[in-house]
Length: 182
Image (cartoon, rainbow, N blue to C red; front, side, top):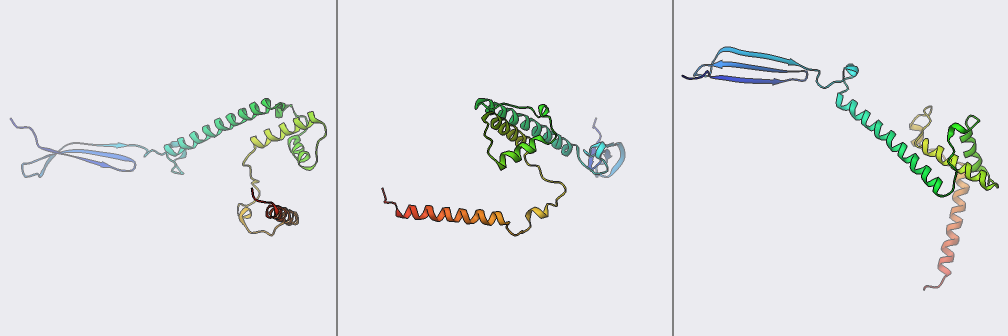
């Protein structure tokens, strides 16, 4: 007894897979349809983001990068706290600060003047460093990105700083030329 001769066809589409089994004669002509089936799927598109056609893989990638970013930030802040403690700086939590924007005021004070009181200076440095570590990479959302890369004339302060650096470099080069070789 001889078995049936048949052919199997598979059609893989973006949102479905079609399967068919066809009985064929000895001349390979179709005789009858044995089975046909269609499996419809969502094509890997996240159901919540179907209109934007964002895939599950893409969404899980975003979630994975967010988890990693948060974990690395937490680890980075923990390492900073350990270093501050190791070098004798107090670790001051932002919630313990009284005034709004106090961290910004502390940073401005550190940048503009020398703080005489050693304990207050250490506290201020700790507050400023922890604030910078928490808010690194921040960019003002109200400014266009193009303004960051456009050619702008140098400020007056930058020109003065550049002149001082050039004068310092010229003095260092002259001192180097006057010195005797070893």
